[in-house]
Length: 98
Image 1: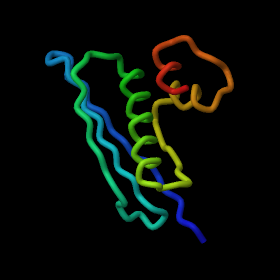
Image 2: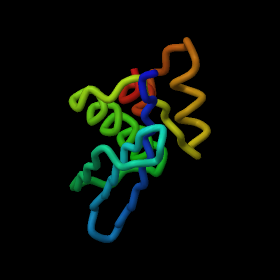
Image 3: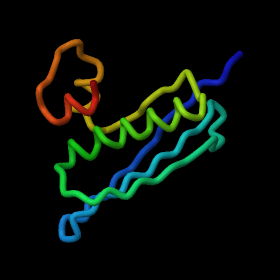
Image 4: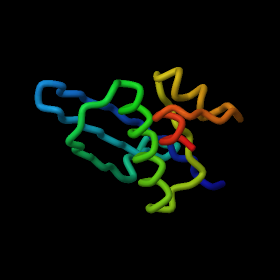
C-alpha cells in the first residue's frame, strides 16, 4: 500500500521588517519526516495571503519531491474553503491558489 503524505506548515510575519517566513514539513503516514523547506520572503502581506503562499510552496515541495498523494492540513479556513470551492476569485489569494 502506498504511503500518503501530509503537509504541515507555519508562517511568521515580521511587519516591522517587511519580512515573511514560511516553514514546510512533509511527513509520511507513519509520521516520519520526508522533507522540509523554508522560505524567506521580503514583503508585507496579510496573514491570509501568507497562508495561501505557504500552501503553494508546500504543494511545490511535494510535487518536486514526488511525494504524492498528499493531504494538506491548515487552520486557515478561508484559504481551505477557496481551495475546495469551484468558484473563481479575483482576489490575491484566489490568484495564488488557482
